[in-house]
Length: 180
Image 1 (tube, rainbow, N blue to C red):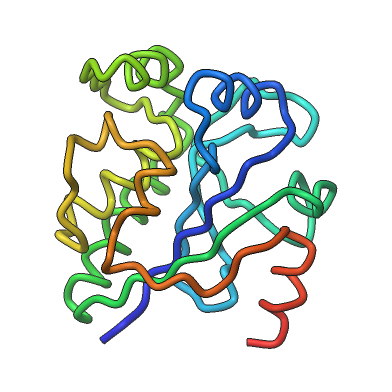
Image 2: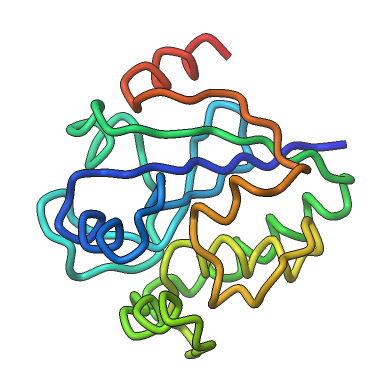
């Protein structure tokens, strides 16, 4: 058995605040990692710390960038334990996307339609939870209750298969992660 890690966050950026206003969800962003120390960790997010655009597939680092400068934001870390074959299949799907990461863009239209519960899938476009959900669905790591393009970060709070490892803020998580 192997573990896949999901980090849910809610920052105080304009995009996160706008998502929160539309959804009232506890968390507005999700990232995925295949390592206990969460590095590397990936999502579809901003490419630059101080600007929401451009956005695309990103390696989200605790040592530099957005999380390093925003350690106060709330987060929750979850673990999904899967069979080795599924773990490596999910990792392969991620690596296939990473090999062409420059071709992927942020799916703003999909994000808006997700709130309206209208499925909208575009090739090479993702929002964060669509990105993570597609990896998990296509690898059969977890059975989703809806299409990846309709999944929100907060939907992951409802999965019994996920074990909550931590709830707090990013700064404390970084300290916790360093103990792993």
